Amino acid sequence: MAMSGLVSNRNFATSFIASGNVYRSGKDLSLQRGGISGVSHFSRCQPRMHFQTNSPLEETVSGQTLAFRSEAAEHCSSVSRQSARRMNFKLKAGRRSQSYISSAPYGRGNIEQRAVHGLGLSKRNHIKENKIRVFYKSEEYDITEANMDSLPSAEGTGEAILLGGNLQQVSPWWQQFPKRWVIVLLCFAAFLLCNMDRVNMSIAILPMSQEFNWNSATVGLIQSSFFWGYLLTQILGGIWADKLGGKLVLGFGVVWWSIATILTPIAARLGLPFLLVMRAFMGIGEGVAMPAMNNLLSKWIPVSERSRSLAFVYSGMYLGSVTGLAFSPILIQKFGWPSVFYSFGSLGSIWFALWLKKSYSSPTEDPDVAPEEKRLILGGSISKEAVTVIPWKLILSKPPVWALIISHFCHNWGTFILLTWMPTYYNQVLKFNLTESGLLCVLPWLTMAVFANIGGWIADTLVSKGLSITNVRKIMQTIGFLGPAIFLTQLSHVRTPALAVLCMACSQGSDAFSQSGLYSNHQDIGPRYAGVLLGLSNTAGVLAGVFGTAATGFILQRGSWNDVFKVAVVLYIIGTLVWNIFSTGEKVLD
Image (tube, rainbow, N blue to C red):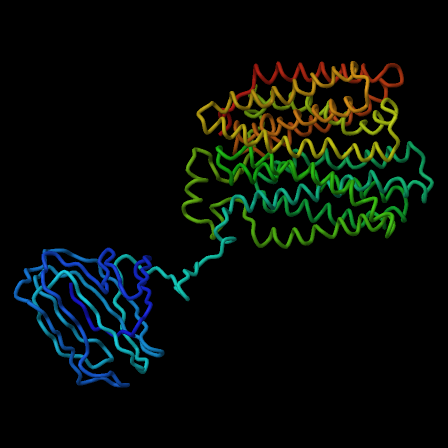
């Protein structure tokens, strides 16, 4: 090993930085993978060797020589042939001094003292290999800083800084956060805003109907106008997302429905037709959200994390309903009903600014994704290319696709009935007042948010343990169907309001396992067409909500709540059979 120059300081604490490795030293430095140390161990050396300078170093130290004093040097044997990595070490001496110690591979049995550029040490001494221990004696000097030439490292340079003994990280933690989960968090926030902007009308419609003298039929017309636009863009949103990318489509959707939300009070004052059109426009924006999100996650999330990521995003919808129902009455009471639309709608601009800065449609387009994460995401067999043509004939010829459509219809029939008619059930059957009914309406949304994430973690754990994706999807969706069916049948047997509320909450909690069943299956069977597949099945799901809500009112005029629950239970059982016979977790569309 060749050593070039040594400048030191008394009682110094030094850091060695080279090729990404960091070594700290105090008075006693240990040899680390080719590093130079204060107490170094060379092979088969017996005597002691001391390095020190003959005289103080001044601003210019040209002409001075470095003396070497060796005790019993005759006992030293030759250094064994080793090749050390070339490394750059930066030492700071005194207050202003800088010097470089470098090592380069040598295979000879001697050590060369080479010139230190800028210090004027030009004498070259050939010294035979010496002693196990080498002690560096340090003196305090004030050396004028000089420009030093560093030797390049074969391994590349790694940078780290030791300040006061603490290693300063080059990248903050938020830059090391997995980029795929940044996308998931942004989708979660979008769905939070989606349901906040949707449910605020259910609260604001009460003071609005009093101000504009709307009757019950008009209120029902306004509430249903949202679904006109929502149905229109389910399939179109999937096509746009698969062709143009999820970033563009979801960004468009949030901006569109946020503007429509802000303009709702203005439209209401202009007249009923303007309000109906504005609510339909809002449905157009929210209709593209689910297909676009599904397209994004199909490209960003590996299959081992698919269930939990989707469950987390959908829990944003449930928490959005909770937030909207909780804050809307407060805003209306203090600032009037228009404040709900202005405040909720303006939040979309904040989200959109983050979305433009942080999101990409796929990891191949994002320059900031770490290579390791990109390999994890793209390592599977999932094709990440954009879609140019939608093979409708092929898609509609697959039984698993129809299993998705039928199961989505059966699932949403019961879900929409519970969420739409629950306040009426609490009031008419359980005899709760309107305030209690409103508070209890929050409970199922909270329950679904919690159990959706629990189900997601269970599903991904089962997949990681080796259970097939097909079996995992069937197990989770069976719970999502039979759980609500069982608890709804118990409602006719309970005698206390507390047990009735518990049954409703358990029904919705088990329903949330569907997020790891049919809602995750679009990406399993056709990842390239995940947006289109969700658009198809969710269209059926929305139709179930519209028809189911209307049919419930018709049944209640001629029957009872038990009849309403029986219809929902029958559809849950049909969905269970269809799902377990025809669904699969394997890719059938490529």
